Length: 419
Image 1 (cartoon, rainbow, N blue to C red):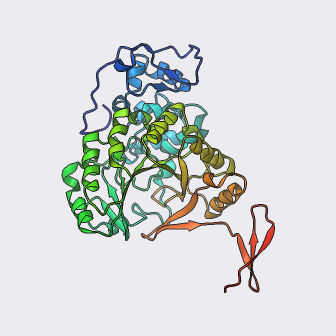
Image 2: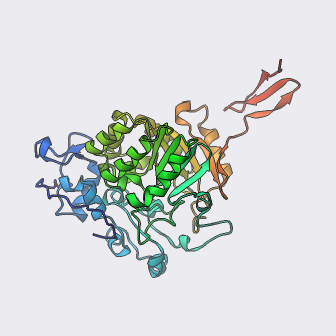
């Protein structure tokens, strides 16, 4: 296995033959029908667009194995030498980049890698996942912990910034390393899986602070943990009468949709009200596999919201962002946040101006349904929390009247006299 992990990702080989990429399919989804349902992988959706990638790079793998989330983690791209089998690193900048690979931890699941091989260097997923030399240059204002989470940590693996809610960093392991990640200082460390014993102080803190009503389980990515560990954490929190809701922050349904098994959903259903915040970045991520994962979660009763980081040259235009939000609604995910990219070291090439974000929100308002428009926020450096940003719709006052401007730029008067 590439990379280090202390989880057991073993799985039995499934005897389902791989179908040639040149085969024709009658449906947008390819399902493994060669075996009875009881004998094949729980997750059996394969995007036809991925078949050529599988056929070329994993010629001996069965479709059952490809659909197994543990196999996906086992075979993730974690070294530049392996990644060079699917990405061309022969340019002048690439040769210089390869001298610094020890400073650039890497992890991409085979499934997610299959989405970034077409389109060359302009592929949006490749831009977000494959390191470049830009990451080696730190600009003023950048910090490894820009949100000062460590300063707001009353117990190990816990961040308490807002009075009524806490952020529980349950693991340091992710299924994929996004190059712009706020918590890049956590991943790829020697010990990424914290385990039950490392959670006890945080759980005790939550138990003793009755004003906490909302717990966000994040990391790393909590859905990479064994179900027994995740269930232990959920049970511990549900046994505290003052905890009203639990949220899980994850990108697993996007980079490792095969993880959303019926067994996982069945377990999660026991701990409602349980919400899920999913990190989506680009419309290209909305594949049949992701649709299947979202359907399972929705039918398991989990309200889902999206969190999207605004990224230069990837999703920083009105059409791309609108297409993403429309696609999310189709997949039963409510657009929730667009984040201004946090100033972590080496992130300047990802960050747009704030005016660009406001331009996108203004370009969406009035041209699509309100459900499709997320909040645009800056998570303030220094631990200030999320600050919402909106275009100027209130122009001013005329006596007791409020002067408003709509999405078309037309002005309207609202009587705002206080009685």
